[in-house]
Amino acid sequence: MQTKQQQLGKWGENQAYAYLLRKKYKIIERNFRASNFGEIDIIAKKNNEYIFVEVKTKRNQHFGLPEEELTGDKKKKLDFAIYYYLETKGLYNERWRFDFIALEIMNTKIQLRHYRYAS
Image (cartoon, rainbow, N blue to C red):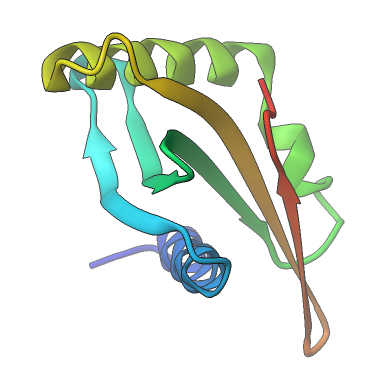
């Protein structure tokens, strides 16, 4: 059984997934588990470039903005996870970038912010 936080995270990932599809991204994989390095929420491709997407969702600003969750330690883990993915898939020479999607639920309004080249 998932906790409320896990349910919110999954809901946010689904919103980000739908947004990326609307923007004509091709979704390659979701929730890629990178050994001990953690998980990449969404791996997509657009214009011959791989895009690794981290998604953070918050219900309100009482505990800060979603952007504040992307700490230096989190970025470092994500970098390791991205390199692990590239290595295991043999994609050494491919173009890639890291994007961040922040979602906030404010009353009944959803605000989505997409940061390209977030690293």
